[in-house]
Amino acid sequence: MPAEHWVLSKTKYLAGLQCPKLLWMYYHAKDKFPPVNAQTQAIFDQGHEVTGLARTLFHGGLEVEGHEDYEAILKKTQELLPMRKPLFEPAFRYKNTFARPDILNPNQDGSWDIYEVKSSTEAKDVYYSDLAFQKYCYQGAGLKIRRCYLVLINNEYVRKGPINPEQLFSIENVSKEVEPYEAIVPQELERMLTSLSLKACPAVKIGPHCLKPYECALVEHCWDFLPGENVFILYGFKKDKEFQLVDKKIYGISDIPADYPLSDNQRIQWQCHKSKRTHRNPSSINDFFKQLEFPLHFLDFETVNPAIPFYDLSRPYQNVPFQFSLHILSEWERAPVHHGYLADGPEDPRPLLLQKLRRLIEPRGTVLSYNMSFELGRLEECVEAFSEYQTWFEKLKPRFRDLIDPFRQFDYYDPKQLGRTSIKAVYPALTGGSYEGLEIADGESASYQYARVTFREGIPEEEKARVRAGLEVYCKLDTRAMIDVLNVLKKAADGQA
Ligand code: SF4
Image 1 (cartoon, rainbow, N blue to C red):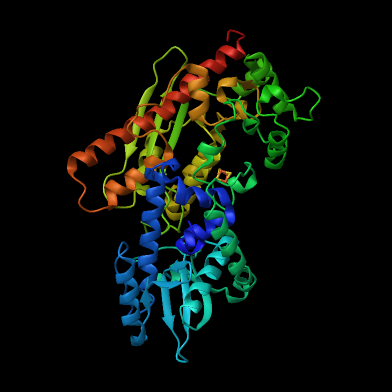
Image 2: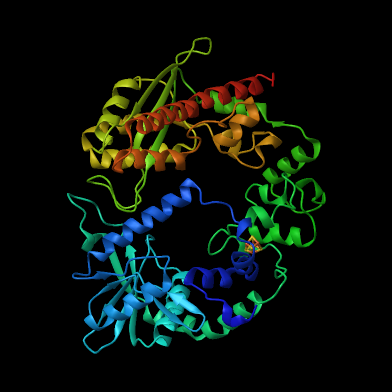
């Protein structure tokens, strides 16, 4: 197909900058892309919400509605331009490019400024490429562009009452930063159009570009030649070294030569994958057990972290706990007792969560969390907002121990962990247990689903009940899994496993 046939949007332009194969596949092999999952959809939804709120900063703005009928939105844009009002998502086409700014704001001198809204808290190079592409398109279409702005989230903002968009957003003039990216747009477009016209997909090896600036949607497709126990699962191994090994056609961990320089933990991993055996260090595991005191409390939080804070006294992207699961084990031979809390409704979940935890956690005994900096960090933020719990928390803090430690230190490593130390990897590897088949099976889904059924209007009651039941099961399994994992460690410490 001739080059004139292709029309590139900014998404496709950025894809083309990342990888020619990715761009080619977008146009020639769309079926190879995985469907949008719930997490990606949540990111899109949040982006729309953030953009909608940013628009309120531009009074009297007019939206160019529609997505499918390009000719209609181009025509509508041309009708609105002479009104010299802020325009939301107007559309422009120039040569092989098509773009829509989030906000186009008119200036007195007849020029326009581009405002690109991002849910991020900081500017990134990829945003400058995005703006450079847009500027090329709009200027080519006849607009005079004066400045380029990024509308970013101000992560210092603390909500007090209704959201204040003036404070939530920070607007940066990035015209200077965009300039160097503008110069390369025409030649990059030419290169992309040429490669799009090829019948065969460009041959591109996997490399760091697969993960930056965004993780490519085709990683599963392009990386599927790697074995499951591949060099990318080496713990703490640098990315450039991983790709160097792949370049040498060393794909599996056990293919790594014996004299290849590895850290002590990577060497343990290498030996385990080669011998298909579990590594245990009973004396270090015993040291871990010496720090524990009954009753053992197993604590896990689920959190929401929206860009636009849901609650007063919280910042953008702050993880606010809305649920906990707490198992208490008074001695090895006794059955653990379970307690849980799942907030209901749009009110701030923290006061009740703190109240319940203070009541349920016994005055002595260890509190075990998995990757405890997360739970401790959340509690610290909670008591910052609700200072009446400060004294209680200060006393509780030293009682925390981290169940991830024996795994991070490689005192225990099972090759089935595939290099991961999270509870989602350790629990199935050590116990044969599974998160599979759960309605909600990971923290991101928990966060997304809770926010959806709690804050979105029009969710049927049955669906709400189903999601909430899924949340209860999931969070409870996280702490139950910790007990099961601790039991396996105990056997290892006793020399039985
Ligand atoms: S996975 Fe890597 S090589 Fe494959 S299309 Fe994406 S960026 Fe290109």
